[in-house]
Structures are given as structure tokens and as C-alpha cells.
Image (spheres, rainbow over the protein chains, first blue to last red):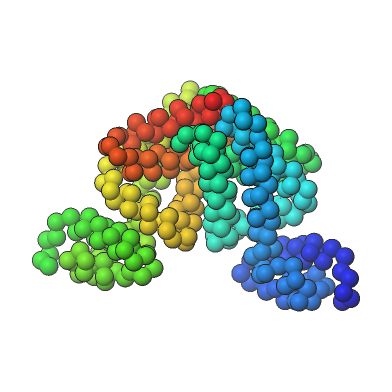
Length: 189
Length: 189
């Protein structure tokens, strides 16, 4: 490999997800991922601290986007509108990813209890930070936590539907639609 | 110890929670829990498969109660009313426990990332089973999953508020109240 490796990060992700799907996450090494991508192990570790980071690498950035969306919502917005602003920011980031890789990532996580628990913990962390941001805006409990957790349920279901939809649709539109579904549920329909 | 040990299960739970709080879950053995309760290790293992079961022992029964509540809801009920029937069944079971022990249990779980992930996975499992029950009643997706996950958020926040409330109130009433809060959130207030 030369020093210039176009989209080596993307190739490593693609190789890793294919190998995880074939053999299971626990059975795959960083060296094997690099070999499948036609890159060196050293290149792998320039992009990822470990193979888990292939799956969870964007978490910090996503958290920041959600919180920036939430804190930027107009002061007059109700709690669910504020959460919706955070979800819109998340959708605009996540919607840039390849749907096929998102779907593979979800399948790998669902097949491994430890990864699934980590994914759930990540979403629970986002929810508790969003709830804290709502409390700082004067929203009381349990309203702040309920709005934040319902919001994370909207994000999770929207991502799954977006990644597995037979026709390509925008993630942002699906998040909006799911928020409408949540409101309909709460209204009793 | 004689063979007749009144409330040995309760004494073991109390001893375990006290030790977990003092030293951290990972630093406590079954033998130490038994000794603190004034019972033998053998008695401990008659009641619990391991020390984790002290914290998660009622999970299967709770799952059954929730699903029985859900499947028993009138056919004309909307998705959130159906979920509410499951939550009412859960509240009537969990509301029988000692509030001080519930509070200690929550603190032990929150202090240990692995236990917290297990607790989240348990709630996610309940949610996916409740969503499946809703789909069998003809509720579509994502509505079924959103109703189920919002319901689990109601249960979790209600349990925390109930266990930590300075005055004793019924868990069932707090679940009802939280469902009202969820509706208010969805309506925009």
C-alpha cells in the first residue's frame, strides 16, 4: 500500500461489516479486516482504536449534534419540539451514511448481546443528556425524561425503517413521520 | 441456623443490597452475603442462582405480568391504553416491594455499567415483546414499537420516582400520572 489510500476508512468499514456478518463480531480480528480491505493493520489502527469503534465510532459526534440541535431550539418550543430539533440534527448527520452499511451494522449489533447492550446504553446516555438539557430549559420531571426517551425511540425506529426500506426515502422525513406516529399514539389512536 | 429460616430470601436480599452499596457489586461474594444475613452459603444458593439474581430475580415474573396485562386489555383499546394495562399489572406487582430496597437496587445498578446495560436490555426485551403483542392486535409499525418503548420509559421513571419519593405514594397512581405526562408531552405542552 502506498501512503495515499483513497477512502481507506470506508473500505475498512465495509470489510469489517462483511466479516462481522459472515463470522460474528467476536470471531474477527483487526488484521483480518485490514487484509479484506487490502490495507495494512497499521492503517486500520490509524482509523479505529479497535474493531468495536468501527460500529460505534460516530457516537461522540452524534451526541454533540443532538445536543446542539436541542440547545438551539427556540425558547418557546414545547419539550417534544425541542427533542425533535435534536432528532432533525441527528437525521441530517446519519442520513448521509450508506443505507446498506447502516442495515448491516444494525444486523451485526442485533446478533450480539454485548453489542446490543452497548447500543442501548449509548441511546440511554443520549436520552439522559437530552433530558438534562430540557430541565435546564425549565421542563420538569418526569416530563423531560419521557420526552427524551420517547425521542430516542423515534430515532431508533426511524433508523431501522430507513435502512431497511425497499425504496430510498430521506431519514429526516421518516423521523418527522415517526414523531407524528408518537403523537397519534399518545392521543389514543 | 436451623432448617426453618423465616424470610431468609428477604434477609439475603437486604444483606446483598447493603454489601453491594458499601463495596460495589463486583467486590461481594455469595458467601459474604450469606454471612451478613446470618445464613449459610447453601441457603443463599437455594434462593438465588448467583448474586446477579438478587437484582434480576423477578424479571421473568414481571415480563409475564406485563404481557398478561397487555393481552387482557379490551379489543377496543388504543395502543397506549393496551400498554397502560400492562404497566398497571407491573405496578401492582412491583408496588408490593419495599421502597427502600427498590431504591438501593436502583443505586447499585446505576453505579455499575454492566448491570445498567443488563437492566436496559431487560426493559428493551419487555418493549419488544409488548410491541409484538400490539402487532398481533393489528397495530402497525412504527406505532407498536413507539407505544411499547414509551410505556417502558413511563415504567422506569415511575419506579424511580416511587422509590425515591419522600412520602409514600402508590406506584400504580404514579404510573397513571406519568402516562398523563407522556400524553401532555405529545400534545406539545
